[in-house]
Length: 306
Image (cartoon, rainbow, N blue to C red; front, side, top):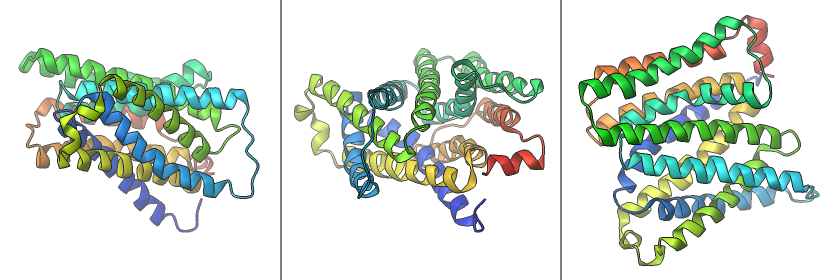
């Protein structure tokens, strides 16, 4: 572990704050522009920022990419950038930022589930699998129980799309993990963002983005700049710095703060109503994820930070 971890804790805290704010920003921007146009400009901005950093990291080094590496970059762009982005943006057109961000709390559980299915990773203790059940119960509270109290078909549909987004993000994480066995996290992230930008670009052309009124709306640019610079560029850089210096286990725990920030910003900025079912669902999701990632001993904590 780094001898001075506090600054990396602060960077991770900032990254989670940015990611929590993305749900509010996403809710605001989908009312202004269609999803492909939003995604294209968001990731175009991120690409323009990632590429110089990537090129600087390659100065004096050989570019060793196999067809397999390029294929994995494409799959990362197809799933975690384009696929996730489409489900996220379309879903936010139907549900609220508060409900979406709570559902996003199952992200670590989704990653663990895909790791189990794809990489055959097993949780060290059988009781940890109860974390999946607890997290699922949290989603039931947000989507199912809340629907019984205040049923809205648009919320139900939007929440279903957000669940799909989280499932796709877990798959993206598996492609990323495979890619990072031979390439750096910066290489893999940059490659995925570039391919995702191309895919969104094709969709934006189909939407005829150049005639969209949103392009002269300052609110549109404010939100895509926030999502491109703070959420995608700085968020990913800070998160991977945390993984590098603190370890994946300690860094992933911070993801539990994303729905907390998301609910806070939803209530303050969008003035959304926070029902008791949301808070119960949030608590269950966080507890479930903590069960899955709970270290069995001090030794496991130290190994996770290596």
